[in-house]
Image (cartoon, rainbow, N blue to C red; front, side, top):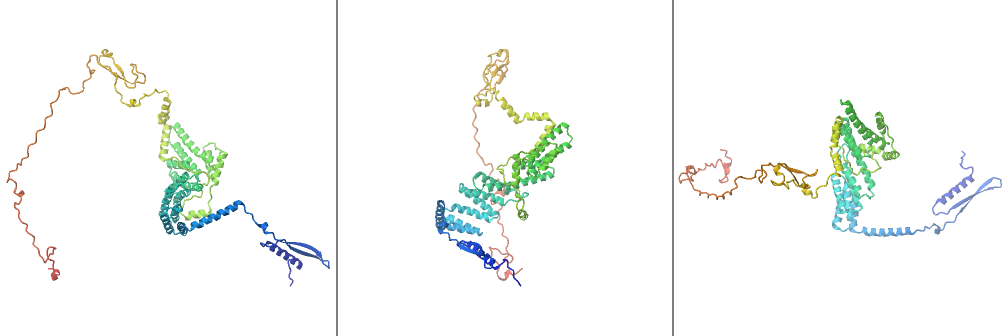
Length: 575
């Protein structure tokens, strides 16, 4: 059997082996670089031969391989040596040892032991430099332990930490943890939403109190996720009311979502549902037996509100999934379809691209864990830090009634609008410039009106029987009062010239002095009218009094504490 080699000859195989050996030797660290050269010669028989010559390059000197350190590198090395020396010195302190021991216990899940060590350190070393870290570590141990009671205690510890150390960098972390406590306890949108509301308040408080913290982006993202849950709840309630054709409650819920949570992932559905609710009201108006002018006014109101909701979808949420539904509804209403500006289109595209898609892991978590769905929450833009005024169903109902009344009686509606407080305030502001100046003394204007400068009988034109105009406080004092003055007309009879001006005097007719009040007579002395011996016999003490005989007592039948008890066989004698 002939063995065939890869190489054409033995010489070629040897040459290849030497070349591979040289390459391996050159790749080893610290080895000298080996170089080879191949030469072709002819032997005595005239056959070509290849000769390989290997040569080793001299080793590079240590001076060339030496790395020169810069000044900054040397300074950093010295700083690290100094820091390590300080840490080694601090590690030997007893308070540091207790703190490190508590951290190790927390990592292992021994939270009670960790809190006991930390509390011992705080009580034993009240001036320790690790006091602030120890308080925060106690709160972290409660937070990591979990459970309703532990999380409640953790919230209290974090609040105390913020109170004691408000300017520390860790205060922002503590406030962030308070929001995370409620975030962990959030339930699904169709359940209790109290925890979600508290989480929103705590994250907003963190963004307001610590705007320069490094945790601000994380807090904003958590706030967007919380608002996604709250918006989902409101939208689902609105859908329920829409299925029961309660359009006032539907409009109120959808309008609240549109005003409070503009980054909601299903905002296009919310606005389309809002427009559909107004269109449902328009259909009710078309089916009702109303005058043509009133029907036209109501249809104009509801169609305009529905078209405004559809246009908002087309303009501000042009990259959403259901924007075509809004365009189709505008086309069905024979209205022009608006075109969003490049800025609006770019903002909508950025908002939709920031959302995260559902992965297999996310779907598994939502299926197994009892947690709200926050996957589609936006990850770009600013969340709302204050809630606008919520729209309520009674307000929408009152608007419906007002629109109906104004459509049926436009003249009365115009008069009511003119007499409204806003119109009155506008009229008052317009007439302020032409109004006369008020009196200098405001107290005099507030005082009740009184008659002054009334002429006595017989003066002026009293004999002619004409009326006399007198001025009151605030007037100019002239007989001809100005347009803004007030007056009193005193009418007197010409035949009545008495001092009272014809009025009957007030008071009794008999003005004589009454006699002095007499002193009351003395009371008579008390006399006992009962004669001795006349008292009934039953009331006389000792009368017919007899001793009551004591009841007989049989020792064989009864026993008492005042008598001797039965003894011996008498206890067993039933007779």
